[in-house]
Amino acid sequence: MSVKVRALAKHYGDQRAVNQISFEANPGKILGFLGPNGAGKSTTMKMLTGYLAPTSGEAEICGKNILNEPLEVKSLIGYLPENTPLYNDMYIKEFLSFVGETYQLKNLKQRVEDVVKRVGLTPEQHKKIGMLSKGYKQRVGLAQAIIHNPQVLILDEPTSGLDPNQLTDIRALIKTLGVNKTVIISTHIMQEVEALCDEIIIINKGEIVANNTLAKLKEQYQDSSLEEIFRKLTLN
Amino acid sequence: MYAVFKRELFSFLSSLVAYITIGVFLLACALLLWFFPETSILDYGYAEMNGFFSLAPFLFMFLVPAITMRSFAEERREGTYVLLATKPISDSQIILAKYFACVVLLILALLPTSIYFFSIYQLGFPKGNIDTGAVIGSYLGLFFLGNAFTAVGIFSSSITKNQVIAFAVAVFVCFLAYSGFEAASKIFVASSVETILLNIGINEHYQSISRGVLDTRDLVYFISFALVFLGLTKLILEGKKWKN
Image (cartoon, rainbow over the protein chains, first blue to last red):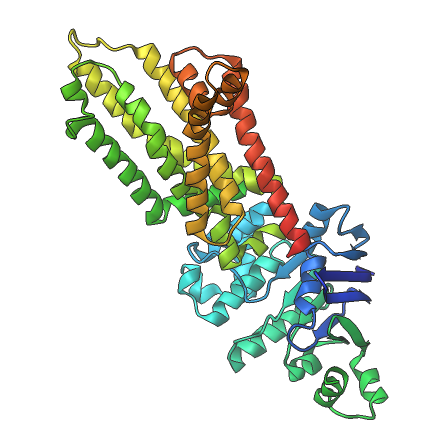
């Protein structure tokens, strides 16, 4: 059990962004995090990665508590934040070396080369990040998340704004990463969920409204499409 | 921590901002010390650098906040702070890394002014007739003063996403700390409050180091001044984690 979340909550004043959610994610599985905008997906991810502190509840990453051992937890997680913030003034390799240094990686040069090849950045590798197109920026974001070979990958809308070709590439990459890691991705694209995810959590107004495998979910709702299930669960 | 420090420093040095602020600082120094007749050393006629050292704190009041204002404010605005905060580096390490990067930049701004010393050294009559000890002391004082201002600047950069606000707050707090307390102390002439206010202010300690006497009290003052503001920065960063 590499990600364990128990009654995690985040309140902004009176507003309950995340209201006591509990779930688990396992290695070798890709967990899809679905929900309308503002449902609390990103907030949950930010809490797991230690960027926000939860109002109450707890979470464990590979047996380590996110509040008691924040630095250990952070080195176990690879995180691609929403909108892929990057240092636009740095060169790709310079930036990836910087990220590698924060994880205190050995063989840094080799690691950077590998990860550049892996995410398909080779043709652009000598450019500044600010000069890249959105798709390539997304790849840099993904590269900085996997450079330290983390146990747990948390990707916040990794495919937003990509063209169909890039979409296929990035999905294939996430699929291969999911073979031996725990991957949590959030997305709005239903086909993506069907193509990628083994398990699905649908979250609405800070609460989990469905947590199951895709097949079981479809069984439960008499073979309606995922889109219909999503609308049924989040539109009331 | 070294990785963040290196990144900060390189991003300063690879952007024009650093060169322009340092350039403006040096230009202002040069104009005031050598060209404008009222403050010119040449017109003054004595081979000493006191003019520079009484002027420099006021220039620092603008130079230092200009350097520090981007450190947290820009990262928050661009969203890159998320990247930094989710790497296995503690808040204190991030703060110190940014702080030291700014201090290094400050030293880079200060180094070229040593030309003034050599010029005056050559111009003195007889040649070399300048109190070298006092100059070294004053540079040390200026360095500590810059450290204190940097801590203030880092703090004010952490409280806002807006660089202009960060700059304005830093300038104001630096001014207050440098001459505000001293001015306030004059209200309470010849009472213990006067001494207390004088000792809270930076100028008193700056003058004391500039005299060439390295008193531990002044050292402790400058170090704790910086630590207080860096500590406040940490509180702000941690508070943001809980609130927003």
